[in-house]
Image (cartoon, rainbow, N blue to C red):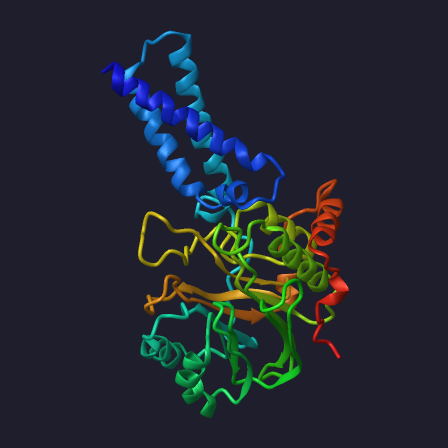
Length: 362
């Protein structure tokens, strides 16, 4: 019994350290990675708390401190993920009218080595999105997706074999498209404007920055700088705006929250669920990496995590209704003192300015 108690004391101390680590503003991957598993850490902390209550309910001061630490960690992580549960108010209103212009987008990180392209093509056939955004697509994937061009005649193609290829297939006309590498060579983003069937125009920014990890980018500096730079661009947009892609950051992280504050964009998942898109194979290791953010001009018609396609990511589908009159009453995250300074700091560290991001408004 003493061995079991000691084990949970050690686990609680480790959990407390990992919980405190992201308070450090260091951009190293081994610090920033602990932004991701908030749900898992909340669940484990709750398990530690319940077990410790059973093992040492009447222990001395040291035991009580351990129990309080477990409870505090569970509550702290739960507060981060609470906005992405149905216990929280919806940030984006549901569309209740059927006569509004709509925009349906499917975003899919296909996993470059995955060769089950038939699954993605079947989902496109089933859901008929206006725009398909694919990530990690190389020349093999481009050849498989060429069949879409009968219906999706407007395309942007950047096949690469470095896991950062990107393609956009649109049945809607594109204006002012540009493929650019904002912060790092070989890491493209796509920026363009589409014309809806109603004649309204919408700007899209499609992103796939590198994640902070020991195998990809040692720091989150470039990722954070690109997200904030695109956020500034979206804030100045004259057209309704959508930002989508595998951002390699979770919805509740400090950086994504800063991006939402700076941009004024909304997240339709808030108040509806996490819609975890990664990892498709391991249910316990899942968090939301694939995103669709949009300006207040839109309300929500549909939001789905689609079935697996052989990738380590699930595709995500969002259908937005263009309704500025109702949408203007929606509230984004409020900018707090220090946010603008932090945003400038992140862009400076990455060597990028918001004017580097193509506005797609010419």
